[in-house]
Length: 379
Length: 58
Image 1 (cartoon, rainbow over the protein chains, first blue to last red):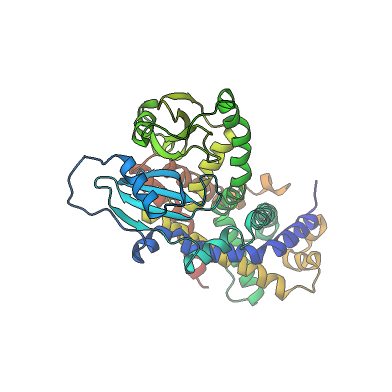
Image 2 (image 1 turned 90 degrees about the vertical axis):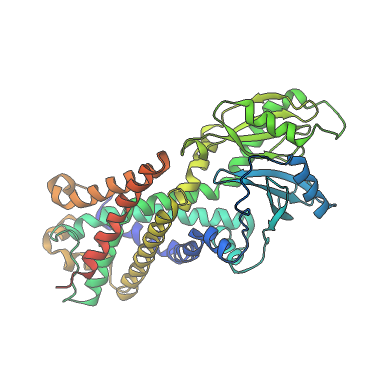
Protein backbone atom coordinates (compact mmCIF):
# COMPACT_ATOMS: atom_id res chain seq x y z
CA UNK A 1 0.00 0.00 0.00
CA UNK A 2 1.39 3.37 -0.97
CA UNK A 3 1.55 5.99 1.75
CA UNK A 4 0.09 9.46 1.33
CA UNK A 5 3.60 10.77 0.88
CA UNK A 6 4.07 8.52 -2.14
CA UNK A 7 0.74 9.58 -3.61
CA UNK A 8 1.67 13.22 -3.08
CA UNK A 9 4.95 12.64 -4.88
CA UNK A 10 3.16 10.85 -7.75
CA UNK A 11 0.59 13.67 -7.98
CA UNK A 12 3.24 16.37 -8.01
CA UNK A 13 5.49 14.87 -10.67
CA UNK A 14 2.89 13.50 -13.07
CA UNK A 15 1.12 16.88 -12.90
CA UNK A 16 4.27 18.93 -13.32
CA UNK A 17 5.30 17.02 -16.42
CA UNK A 18 1.94 17.08 -18.16
CA UNK A 19 0.36 20.37 -17.01
CA UNK A 20 1.79 22.71 -19.65
CA UNK A 21 0.82 20.29 -22.42
CA UNK A 22 -2.62 19.81 -20.87
CA UNK A 23 -3.07 23.59 -20.73
CA UNK A 24 -2.19 23.74 -24.43
CA UNK A 25 -4.66 20.93 -25.17
CA UNK A 26 -7.46 22.51 -23.12
CA UNK A 27 -6.90 25.93 -24.71
CA UNK A 28 -6.69 24.64 -28.29
CA UNK A 29 -9.55 22.21 -27.59
CA UNK A 30 -11.88 25.08 -26.73
CA UNK A 31 -12.28 26.40 -30.31
CA UNK A 32 -12.08 22.86 -31.71
CA UNK A 33 -15.29 21.95 -29.85
CA UNK A 34 -17.01 24.46 -32.12
CA UNK A 35 -15.05 23.63 -35.30
CA UNK A 36 -18.22 22.93 -37.30
CA UNK A 37 -19.88 26.16 -36.18
CA UNK A 38 -16.70 28.12 -36.97
CA UNK A 39 -16.47 26.50 -40.42
CA UNK A 40 -20.07 27.54 -41.06
CA UNK A 41 -19.47 31.09 -39.86
CA UNK A 42 -16.35 31.44 -42.03
CA UNK A 43 -18.29 30.23 -45.05
CA UNK A 44 -16.05 27.18 -45.46
CA UNK A 45 -18.94 24.84 -45.15
CA UNK A 46 -21.60 25.49 -47.73
CA UNK A 47 -25.00 24.03 -46.97
CA UNK A 48 -26.86 22.53 -49.92
CA UNK A 49 -29.40 25.08 -51.15
CA UNK A 50 -32.83 24.71 -49.55
CA UNK A 51 -36.17 24.62 -51.30
CA UNK A 52 -35.13 21.88 -53.66
CA UNK A 53 -37.72 19.36 -52.53
CA UNK A 54 -36.50 16.43 -54.52
CA UNK A 55 -35.63 12.90 -53.53
CA UNK A 56 -33.83 12.47 -56.83
CA UNK A 57 -30.10 11.85 -56.71
CA UNK A 58 -27.57 12.21 -59.47
CA UNK A 59 -25.38 9.20 -60.06
CA UNK A 60 -22.35 9.31 -57.78
CA UNK A 61 -20.26 8.72 -60.90
CA UNK A 62 -21.19 12.24 -61.99
CA UNK A 63 -19.71 13.52 -58.74
CA UNK A 64 -16.64 11.29 -58.88
CA UNK A 65 -15.84 12.43 -62.42
CA UNK A 66 -16.50 16.07 -61.51
CA UNK A 67 -13.93 15.76 -58.72
CA UNK A 68 -11.56 13.98 -61.11
CA UNK A 69 -11.90 16.86 -63.60
CA UNK A 70 -11.02 19.37 -60.87
CA UNK A 71 -7.80 17.48 -60.16
CA UNK A 72 -6.98 15.35 -63.22
CA UNK A 73 -3.62 14.19 -61.83
CA UNK A 74 -4.97 13.15 -58.42
CA UNK A 75 -6.96 10.11 -57.39
CA UNK A 76 -10.26 9.82 -55.56
CA UNK A 77 -9.55 8.07 -52.24
CA UNK A 78 -12.82 8.23 -50.36
CA UNK A 79 -16.42 9.10 -50.94
CA UNK A 80 -18.31 9.86 -47.75
CA UNK A 81 -21.67 10.93 -46.42
CA UNK A 82 -22.88 12.60 -43.25
CA UNK A 83 -25.97 11.23 -41.53
CA UNK A 84 -26.94 14.81 -40.61
CA UNK A 85 -26.58 16.05 -44.18
CA UNK A 86 -28.11 13.53 -46.49
CA UNK A 87 -27.97 15.86 -49.49
CA UNK A 88 -24.18 16.11 -49.54
CA UNK A 89 -21.42 13.86 -50.85
CA UNK A 90 -17.86 14.49 -49.70
CA UNK A 91 -14.95 13.49 -51.91
CA UNK A 92 -11.43 13.14 -50.58
CA UNK A 93 -8.61 13.13 -53.11
CA UNK A 94 -4.89 12.41 -52.80
CA UNK A 95 -1.79 12.60 -54.98
CA UNK A 96 -2.25 8.84 -55.33
CA UNK A 97 -5.11 6.64 -54.17
CA UNK A 98 -2.92 5.31 -51.34
CA UNK A 99 -1.40 8.63 -50.21
CA UNK A 100 -1.63 9.37 -46.46
CA UNK A 101 -2.27 13.05 -47.04
CA UNK A 102 -5.36 14.43 -48.73
CA UNK A 103 -4.78 16.82 -51.62
CA UNK A 104 -8.37 18.11 -51.73
CA UNK A 105 -11.63 17.70 -49.90
CA UNK A 106 -14.75 18.64 -51.86
CA UNK A 107 -18.43 18.71 -51.02
CA UNK A 108 -21.05 18.14 -53.71
CA UNK A 109 -24.83 18.49 -53.80
CA UNK A 110 -26.11 14.90 -54.01
CA UNK A 111 -29.31 16.03 -55.77
CA UNK A 112 -27.77 18.10 -58.56
CA UNK A 113 -24.10 17.10 -58.58
CA UNK A 114 -23.12 20.75 -58.16
CA UNK A 115 -19.85 21.52 -56.39
CA UNK A 116 -20.71 23.09 -53.01
CA UNK A 117 -17.26 23.88 -51.74
CA UNK A 118 -13.68 22.88 -51.10
CA UNK A 119 -12.34 22.64 -47.57
CA UNK A 120 -9.02 24.44 -47.26
CA UNK A 121 -6.35 21.94 -46.22
CA UNK A 122 -3.38 22.84 -44.03
CA UNK A 123 -4.07 26.56 -43.97
CA UNK A 124 -5.61 29.05 -41.60
CA UNK A 125 -5.72 29.61 -37.87
CA UNK A 126 -8.03 26.67 -37.16
CA UNK A 127 -5.54 24.36 -38.85
CA UNK A 128 -2.72 25.65 -36.61
CA UNK A 129 -4.94 25.11 -33.57
CA UNK A 130 -5.82 21.61 -34.76
CA UNK A 131 -2.20 20.63 -35.38
CA UNK A 132 -1.15 21.97 -31.95
CA UNK A 133 -3.92 19.85 -30.46
CA UNK A 134 -3.22 16.60 -32.30
CA UNK A 135 0.51 16.41 -33.04
CA UNK A 136 2.43 19.60 -32.19
CA UNK A 137 3.42 19.72 -35.90
CA UNK A 138 5.50 16.60 -35.26
CA UNK A 139 3.49 13.91 -37.03
CA UNK A 140 2.80 10.53 -35.47
CA UNK A 141 5.50 10.93 -32.83
CA UNK A 142 3.98 14.22 -31.72
CA UNK A 143 0.60 12.52 -31.43
CA UNK A 144 2.02 9.62 -29.43
CA UNK A 145 3.89 12.06 -27.18
CA UNK A 146 0.63 13.87 -26.40
CA UNK A 147 -0.89 10.45 -25.70
CA UNK A 148 1.85 9.80 -23.16
CA UNK A 149 1.11 13.16 -21.53
CA UNK A 150 -2.52 12.06 -21.40
CA UNK A 151 -1.50 8.90 -19.54
CA UNK A 152 0.31 11.08 -17.01
CA UNK A 153 -2.88 13.14 -16.65
CA UNK A 154 -4.80 9.95 -15.81
CA UNK A 155 -2.28 9.11 -13.09
CA UNK A 156 -2.37 12.69 -11.85
CA UNK A 157 -6.18 12.66 -11.63
CA UNK A 158 -6.29 9.33 -9.78
CA UNK A 159 -3.57 10.37 -7.32
CA UNK A 160 -5.43 13.65 -6.85
CA UNK A 161 -8.53 11.73 -5.77
CA UNK A 162 -6.46 9.81 -3.21
CA UNK A 163 -5.15 13.11 -1.80
CA UNK A 164 -8.64 14.63 -1.76
CA UNK A 165 -9.58 12.53 1.27
CA UNK A 166 -6.97 13.74 3.78
CA UNK A 167 -7.37 17.35 2.65
CA UNK A 168 -11.13 17.31 2.97
CA UNK A 169 -11.49 15.11 6.06
CA UNK A 170 -12.33 18.01 8.35
CA UNK A 171 -14.02 20.22 5.76
CA UNK A 172 -17.53 20.24 4.37
CA UNK A 173 -17.87 19.51 0.65
CA UNK A 174 -17.27 22.61 -1.40
CA UNK A 175 -15.57 24.61 1.33
CA UNK A 176 -13.85 27.65 -0.19
CA UNK A 177 -11.88 29.64 2.41
CA UNK A 178 -11.86 33.19 1.13
CA UNK A 179 -10.97 34.72 4.50
CA UNK A 180 -7.68 32.92 5.01
CA UNK A 181 -4.46 32.73 3.02
CA UNK A 182 -4.49 32.92 -0.75
CA UNK A 183 -2.79 29.52 -0.76
CA UNK A 184 -5.76 27.95 1.00
CA UNK A 185 -8.08 29.64 -1.48
CA UNK A 186 -6.22 28.16 -4.45
CA UNK A 187 -6.13 24.80 -2.66
CA UNK A 188 -9.89 24.84 -2.05
CA UNK A 189 -10.56 25.78 -5.68
CA UNK A 190 -8.24 23.00 -6.81
CA UNK A 191 -9.92 20.37 -4.63
CA UNK A 192 -13.44 21.51 -5.51
CA UNK A 193 -12.96 21.72 -9.28
CA UNK A 194 -10.85 18.58 -9.35
CA UNK A 195 -13.40 16.37 -7.61
CA UNK A 196 -16.42 17.87 -9.39
CA UNK A 197 -15.07 17.61 -12.94
CA UNK A 198 -13.26 14.33 -12.22
CA UNK A 199 -15.31 11.94 -14.37
CA UNK A 200 -15.56 14.30 -17.32
CA UNK A 201 -11.84 15.03 -17.23
CA UNK A 202 -11.00 11.32 -16.88
CA UNK A 203 -13.26 10.42 -19.80
CA UNK A 204 -12.07 13.21 -22.10
CA UNK A 205 -8.46 12.52 -21.13
CA UNK A 206 -8.71 8.77 -21.60
CA UNK A 207 -10.58 9.00 -24.91
CA UNK A 208 -7.96 11.54 -26.02
CA UNK A 209 -5.26 8.97 -25.30
CA UNK A 210 -7.22 6.37 -27.29
CA UNK A 211 -7.50 8.84 -30.18
CA UNK A 212 -3.73 9.32 -30.24
CA UNK A 213 -3.53 5.61 -31.06
CA UNK A 214 -5.83 5.91 -34.11
CA UNK A 215 -3.04 5.45 -36.68
CA UNK A 216 -1.52 2.33 -35.06
CA UNK A 217 -5.00 0.93 -34.38
CA UNK A 218 -6.14 1.27 -38.02
CA UNK A 219 -2.80 0.03 -39.27
CA UNK A 220 -3.06 -3.05 -37.06
CA UNK A 221 -6.56 -3.72 -38.40
CA UNK A 222 -5.52 -3.25 -42.04
CA UNK A 223 -2.69 -5.74 -41.60
CA UNK A 224 -4.77 -8.33 -39.77
CA UNK A 225 -8.54 -8.60 -40.33
CA UNK A 226 -8.73 -6.61 -43.57
CA UNK A 227 -5.69 -8.34 -45.05
CA UNK A 228 -7.19 -11.70 -44.13
CA UNK A 229 -10.51 -10.90 -45.76
CA UNK A 230 -8.73 -9.87 -48.95
CA UNK A 231 -6.35 -12.84 -48.90
CA UNK A 232 -8.31 -14.99 -51.40
CA UNK A 233 -7.96 -12.23 -54.01
CA UNK A 234 -4.28 -11.51 -53.44
CA UNK A 235 -3.09 -13.16 -56.64
CA UNK A 236 -5.72 -11.92 -59.07
CA UNK A 237 -4.51 -9.37 -61.56
CA UNK A 238 -7.23 -7.53 -63.35
CA UNK A 239 -7.61 -4.34 -65.30
CA UNK A 240 -8.32 -1.08 -63.50
CA UNK A 241 -11.73 -0.81 -65.13
CA UNK A 242 -14.49 -1.17 -62.61
CA UNK A 243 -18.27 -1.07 -62.57
CA UNK A 244 -19.87 2.34 -62.02
CA UNK A 245 -19.31 3.65 -58.48
CA UNK A 246 -23.08 4.02 -58.21
CA UNK A 247 -23.38 0.22 -58.49
CA UNK A 248 -20.92 -0.12 -55.61
CA UNK A 249 -22.79 2.44 -53.49
CA UNK A 250 -26.14 0.74 -54.15
CA UNK A 251 -24.67 -2.67 -53.29
CA UNK A 252 -23.26 -1.21 -50.06
CA UNK A 253 -26.55 0.36 -49.02
CA UNK A 254 -28.46 -2.90 -49.49
CA UNK A 255 -25.79 -5.25 -48.11
CA UNK A 256 -26.94 -5.23 -44.48
CA UNK A 257 -30.38 -4.36 -43.11
CA UNK A 258 -30.54 -1.11 -41.08
CA UNK A 259 -27.05 -0.08 -42.13
CA UNK A 260 -26.15 2.60 -44.66
CA UNK A 261 -22.93 3.81 -46.22
CA UNK A 262 -20.75 6.06 -44.10
CA UNK A 263 -17.74 6.13 -46.38
CA UNK A 264 -16.34 4.21 -49.32
CA UNK A 265 -12.64 3.49 -49.77
CA UNK A 266 -11.46 3.19 -53.37
CA UNK A 267 -9.38 0.24 -54.63
CA UNK A 268 -5.69 0.73 -53.88
CA UNK A 269 -6.24 2.67 -50.68
CA UNK A 270 -4.98 1.04 -47.44
CA UNK A 271 -8.62 0.98 -46.27
CA UNK A 272 -9.62 -1.00 -49.38
CA UNK A 273 -8.29 -3.89 -51.45
CA UNK A 274 -6.29 -3.88 -54.68
CA UNK A 275 -9.38 -4.78 -56.71
CA UNK A 276 -12.03 -4.20 -54.09
CA UNK A 277 -13.89 -1.27 -52.73
CA UNK A 278 -14.49 -1.41 -49.00
CA UNK A 279 -17.73 0.25 -47.92
CA UNK A 280 -17.93 1.22 -44.25
CA UNK A 281 -21.53 1.03 -43.12
CA UNK A 282 -23.04 2.73 -40.10
CA UNK A 283 -26.16 1.84 -38.13
CA UNK A 284 -29.23 3.99 -37.65
CA UNK A 285 -29.47 4.28 -33.85
CA UNK A 286 -27.45 7.02 -32.07
CA UNK A 287 -24.91 4.48 -30.84
CA UNK A 288 -24.64 2.24 -33.92
CA UNK A 289 -24.34 5.35 -36.11
CA UNK A 290 -20.91 5.83 -34.47
CA UNK A 291 -19.82 2.29 -35.30
CA UNK A 292 -18.72 0.87 -38.65
CA UNK A 293 -19.13 -2.43 -40.47
CA UNK A 294 -16.74 -2.99 -43.39
CA UNK A 295 -18.21 -4.58 -46.51
CA UNK A 296 -15.89 -5.75 -49.28
CA UNK A 297 -17.22 -5.23 -52.79
CA UNK A 298 -15.64 -6.59 -55.96
CA UNK A 299 -14.76 -3.64 -58.20
CA UNK A 300 -15.33 -5.63 -61.39
CA UNK A 301 -18.63 -7.29 -60.61
CA UNK A 302 -20.09 -4.89 -58.05
CA UNK A 303 -21.05 -7.78 -55.81
CA UNK A 304 -20.49 -8.01 -52.06
CA UNK A 305 -17.90 -10.67 -51.32
CA UNK A 306 -17.47 -10.37 -47.55
CA UNK A 307 -18.30 -8.33 -44.48
CA UNK A 308 -17.27 -8.47 -40.85
CA UNK A 309 -17.75 -6.79 -37.53
CA UNK A 310 -14.77 -4.66 -36.54
CA UNK A 311 -12.68 -6.01 -33.66
CA UNK A 312 -13.15 -4.54 -30.19
CA UNK A 313 -10.06 -2.33 -30.33
CA UNK A 314 -11.29 -0.50 -33.44
CA UNK A 315 -14.81 -0.18 -32.03
CA UNK A 316 -13.32 1.28 -28.83
CA UNK A 317 -11.60 3.93 -30.93
CA UNK A 318 -14.85 4.75 -32.75
CA UNK A 319 -16.69 5.19 -29.41
CA UNK A 320 -13.80 7.24 -28.01
CA UNK A 321 -14.17 9.85 -30.72
CA UNK A 322 -17.55 11.37 -29.76
CA UNK A 323 -16.72 11.07 -26.06
CA UNK A 324 -13.61 13.17 -26.67
CA UNK A 325 -15.15 15.71 -29.06
CA UNK A 326 -18.47 16.22 -27.23
CA UNK A 327 -20.23 16.44 -30.58
CA UNK A 328 -22.96 13.89 -29.93
CA UNK A 329 -25.61 15.92 -28.13
CA UNK A 330 -26.22 19.05 -30.12
CA UNK A 331 -25.02 22.58 -29.40
CA UNK A 332 -25.98 22.53 -25.69
CA UNK A 333 -23.61 19.60 -25.08
CA UNK A 334 -20.84 21.48 -26.89
CA UNK A 335 -21.41 24.48 -24.61
CA UNK A 336 -21.28 22.18 -21.57
CA UNK A 337 -18.05 20.71 -22.96
CA UNK A 338 -16.60 24.21 -23.27
CA UNK A 339 -17.59 25.16 -19.71
CA UNK A 340 -16.11 21.95 -18.29
CA UNK A 341 -13.00 22.60 -20.35
CA UNK A 342 -12.77 26.07 -18.80
CA UNK A 343 -13.03 24.50 -15.34
CA UNK A 344 -10.29 22.05 -16.30
CA UNK A 345 -8.08 25.00 -17.26
CA UNK A 346 -8.76 26.54 -13.86
CA UNK A 347 -7.86 23.20 -12.22
CA UNK A 348 -4.55 23.07 -14.08
CA UNK A 349 -3.72 26.70 -13.31
CA UNK A 350 -4.56 26.32 -9.62
CA UNK A 351 -2.34 23.24 -9.47
CA UNK A 352 0.52 25.22 -10.97
CA UNK A 353 -0.06 28.13 -8.56
CA UNK A 354 -0.06 25.74 -5.57
CA UNK A 355 3.21 24.22 -6.69
CA UNK A 356 4.76 27.65 -7.36
CA UNK A 357 3.72 29.09 -4.00
CA UNK A 358 5.14 26.24 -1.98
CA UNK A 359 7.72 24.70 -4.23
CA UNK A 360 10.44 24.98 -1.55
CA UNK A 361 8.45 23.43 1.27
CA UNK A 362 8.45 19.65 1.50
CA UNK A 363 5.00 18.23 0.95
CA UNK A 364 4.84 16.21 4.17
CA UNK A 365 5.44 19.32 6.25
CA UNK A 366 2.76 21.18 4.40
CA UNK A 367 0.29 18.37 4.89
CA UNK A 368 1.09 18.31 8.59
CA UNK A 369 0.37 21.98 9.14
CA UNK A 370 -2.74 21.66 7.06
CA UNK A 371 -4.21 18.61 8.59
CA UNK A 372 -3.06 18.70 12.18
CA UNK A 373 -1.48 15.90 14.09
CA UNK A 374 -3.89 13.10 13.28
CA UNK A 375 -3.03 13.15 9.60
CA UNK A 376 0.64 13.69 10.30
CA UNK A 377 0.81 10.48 12.27
CA UNK A 378 -0.51 8.48 9.37
CA UNK A 379 2.08 9.79 6.90
CA UNK B 1 -7.34 4.62 1.90
CA UNK B 2 -8.50 3.56 5.33
CA UNK B 3 -10.69 6.63 5.73
CA UNK B 4 -13.05 5.83 2.87
CA UNK B 5 -15.33 3.74 5.02
CA UNK B 6 -14.71 5.88 8.06
CA UNK B 7 -16.12 9.04 6.51
CA UNK B 8 -18.97 8.27 4.17
CA UNK B 9 -20.01 11.93 4.18
CA UNK B 10 -16.74 12.92 2.58
CA UNK B 11 -17.56 10.87 -0.51
CA UNK B 12 -21.32 11.45 -0.76
CA UNK B 13 -21.21 14.46 -3.07
CA UNK B 14 -18.26 13.21 -5.16
CA UNK B 15 -20.08 9.92 -5.77
CA UNK B 16 -23.37 11.64 -6.63
CA UNK B 17 -21.57 13.94 -9.07
CA UNK B 18 -19.65 11.02 -10.56
CA UNK B 19 -22.86 9.07 -11.18
CA UNK B 20 -24.54 12.12 -12.71
CA UNK B 21 -21.52 12.64 -14.97
CA UNK B 22 -21.47 9.02 -16.10
CA UNK B 23 -25.22 9.11 -16.76
CA UNK B 24 -24.93 12.38 -18.66
CA UNK B 25 -22.01 11.24 -20.78
CA UNK B 26 -23.74 8.01 -21.82
CA UNK B 27 -27.39 9.06 -22.23
CA UNK B 28 -26.75 11.25 -25.29
CA UNK B 29 -24.64 8.47 -26.76
CA UNK B 30 -27.49 5.97 -26.47
CA UNK B 31 -30.61 8.01 -27.14
CA UNK B 32 -31.46 11.04 -29.25
CA UNK B 33 -33.92 13.68 -28.12
CA UNK B 34 -34.73 12.64 -24.57
CA UNK B 35 -31.24 11.21 -24.11
CA UNK B 36 -29.70 14.52 -25.18
CA UNK B 37 -31.89 16.46 -22.74
CA UNK B 38 -30.95 14.12 -19.87
CA UNK B 39 -27.29 14.58 -20.69
CA UNK B 40 -27.59 18.40 -20.73
CA UNK B 41 -29.30 18.37 -17.33
CA UNK B 42 -26.97 15.83 -15.73
CA UNK B 43 -23.75 17.42 -16.99
CA UNK B 44 -24.91 20.91 -16.01
CA UNK B 45 -24.95 19.86 -12.36
CA UNK B 46 -21.13 19.69 -11.90
CA UNK B 47 -20.78 23.10 -13.54
CA UNK B 48 -23.50 24.64 -11.37
CA UNK B 49 -22.03 23.05 -8.22
CA UNK B 50 -18.59 24.48 -9.03
CA UNK B 51 -19.86 27.96 -9.77
CA UNK B 52 -22.14 27.98 -6.74
CA UNK B 53 -19.42 27.08 -4.23
CA UNK B 54 -16.85 29.35 -5.86
CA UNK B 55 -19.22 32.32 -5.69
CA UNK B 56 -20.36 31.53 -2.14
CA UNK B 57 -18.09 33.89 -0.20
CA UNK B 58 -17.98 33.88 3.54
